[in-house]
Image 1 (cartoon, one colour):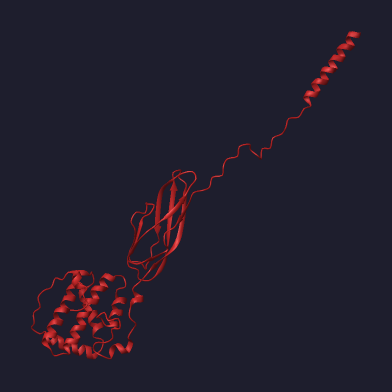
Image 2 (cartoon, one colour):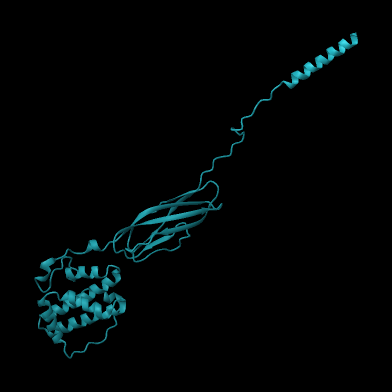
Length: 278
């Protein structure tokens, strides 16, 4: 009997010890706070840093700044939006980091979008775009419209003293805003018509012969150095030059002085075709 009580006591003691161990609780973990958080990686970014105002008939280098924590810039793609006010506009190598933008003739100052897309070595892209202004330069350089004052005398008005009447200079510009190259040739040819008008009123055969040579050189220049319709263009220049009855009468007198005359065929170079004067 005594042995049984001891065994029961021992059994109770063991159970007590076992119960003590089974009632211990582990320290909980917080799943919302990982022990090793991943670093935050920013997306790549690109910023256009070149100028935002470009003049016609000029070339500019485009520049950008690219930032990426995970990969180097792998490919570039530049674009500029087209415009009806721009005759020509090219990016020489759109896939280069710093290509050259060439602006041709601009008929009206306008704003277009310049953009870039950069793809990094991991295939992730970044883009940026800015509005840029394309500037037309020539209209502001025109002389003022002489109005009625431009018709009061045979020579007319030439306030900028470039050898061509102001009314004709303005008409040539608005006739062909898309090509300064053509306008330069037309200005020199217009001088020939003016010279013929003034010679016709002089009753001097030598003056008329010199004017005829100068006039026909201008016609040859239009034919050689422009793609304009020769007949229509020379007819238009005559209308511009002979815008009063006095000028028309003087030009007819010049034409009469050349009846039966022969002028050698001319093959001028471009530099000669741009000369306003004798």
